[in-house]
Image (tube, rainbow, N blue to C red; front, side):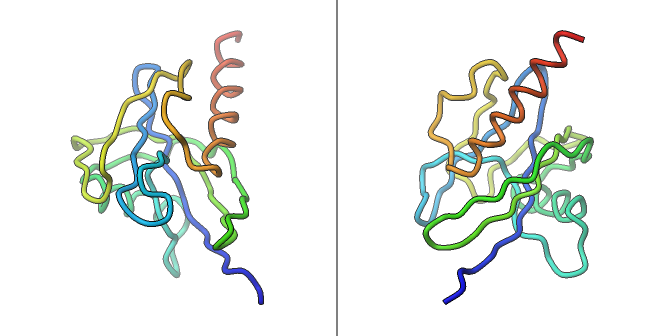
Length: 136
């Protein structure tokens, strides 16, 4: 039987050397941490899906600034493809609609929470992206 393939987008919302992380409130990975986002609907570009998802999940308007990484990860239940983008807040206060909790984590100390396995690759990409930026 072929495994279900899910294609999602994730927002890496950055502000003042910090990144916004959310804690799942449901499902097999309840209480694990992730970058906010969600599924791409038919006819949407990844960027459009991200703007919509953040509006729905966090009541906030973001701008999608830069592509960061595509993560492909095989969970026991499904295969995930996740396009991740650096984003910034246009307006809104990041109201938690679906998540249990949220935190602003410093870019130099992102491992203080238990991230979902697929999101660990994003941390590596963030780390190399921002450490190279410091040396330029």
